Image (tube, rainbow, N blue to C red; front, side, top):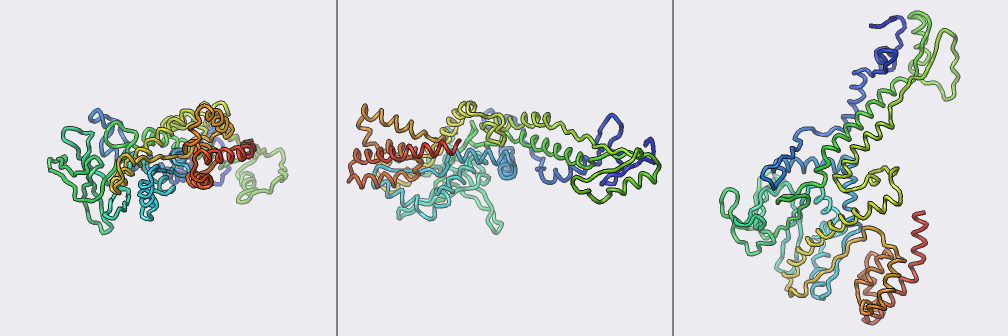
Length: 486
């Protein structure tokens, strides 16, 4: 009930202010305003609510069922592309793992030539280039697993392809050893809508030994490709997305921000409260003063004792909201293994905390790099075997970009102290690579080859040239770094 029907002042929404501020001691936003303000935000931010994962153990090993895993992958793909926290999580993991791309070098000339044909093949650029490596990393993190198929040609060529995670529907294993996967079943639709099924041999089953599937049928592969499977976040066969533990918290965080945006939009509807002495005619006159127009900045408001204009208190308790949002955001940080300063809030970060938090991050990214190194090595070994390279000549060294920048002065000092004690390291290609990488040289192989050519094949002389270059450039590099981070 309105205490005085003649004192109704309408806002821009057409609703009486008295319906918005229902009592003198309470600033209760009407349900209609909240719904109106929230509707637009929800339309922008809301994701499908159906099919949420229930983390219920089914067999004690696979924490989620196949149906739940598929739902998790679909949700992870949405959040990794559309949600800021999800996108930043995937981006940081890929940036720290691959950076500008992984490089390799083989000691044997035959192995080098065979791998150059494979890695430099234009047919493999989409997977093996720096951008291809980053895409593979994103797929692994988002889906929790990635499947590669290697096709070995008769003329020494090798072609690598990825397969959509959701197309792999069954692992066919040795009946007596579930860890020994012999075949992967793939089911997919062609562009013409046809359903196709294929069985790919695993790298453990190059002899194409038969194995029974879930229905008891004996399976052998008729495909030329060999499939590789890399999984993370699992104790079972199938991998689970990096974002899986964070999905619920990301959803709550989005809903919280949507609600906060709705409150701000609702509070922004009214800025001033005008009280007039008089009847409906006076109220209409006061309403007509600013209805449909905005006064210019620094305007002067002139009124008599019959009216009073006061600003409406729009305190949204942002400080409390910040702390509430941070609690939700920290759960996402814990789920993906990243510190909160990496998600846009550096207020809690400083040099001391950065150094403290960098070590765990460095360890987890080094572990992730090692996982990828093993996967690339497994594939390269088959390429080298097909090329006829002896097993003892197949060693391949892989270099990932440094997770944390090296201090060039510390590297130079360490090398200078070690060489007198272990002079044989002067002929080490790896030591030269460390020195060059510390200076930011990406293609260390090319620079080392140039140094070796200038030294006429003498590794020790090449090392001396590398160290001389290092000493000349390091001081300037250090000054640049100090200015950059000042």
